[in-house]
Image 1: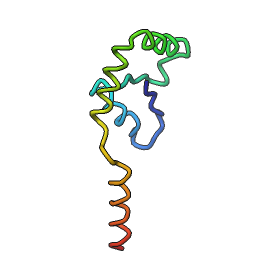
Image 2: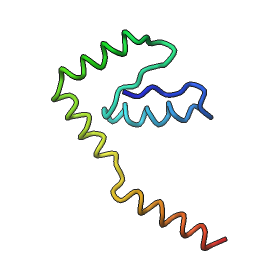
Image 3: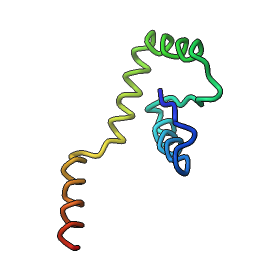
Length: 83
């Protein structure tokens, strides 16, 4: 469950959350339009659906970049060497 911070620069958190929701890897909740009770209901509902959670986990895994930490370190190293 993703709740993007509505005041983030250029609303980038919503943009990022939409990638996950479009891939069916997450649910997005609008911070200003939800309550603690609604969030509780959503969480409890998901917990009763292990197959849905497994499907969401698989979808999230498909979005992952293998060895992302290593790739990021390589990019940083290249930038530092070229300065």
